[in-house]
Amino acid sequence: MFAERERVADAALAGLDDPSPSRRAAAALALLNAVEPQPKAALDIDIPTDPDGVSTLGLAELRALAERVGLDPSPPQPQLST
Image (tube, one colour):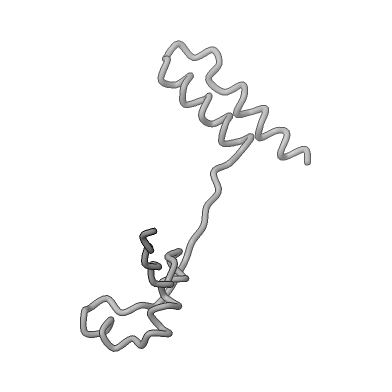
């Protein structure tokens, strides 16, 4: 817990007395990142990168791939006119 407090305090004090506006702005961004770091995520998937490889995927594989990359694999529903 002490290390976390020290990291935030260092970020808060760094650059406060710097005459350069860009260094003061960088210090402000460092403080924001120390208090609330940007979330990071990584995703590794194996997919074919050529048209021939994609054409060999079945419907279930294409749907699973769509879900893994955040797409809705269900077909659009037709709009009925009233």
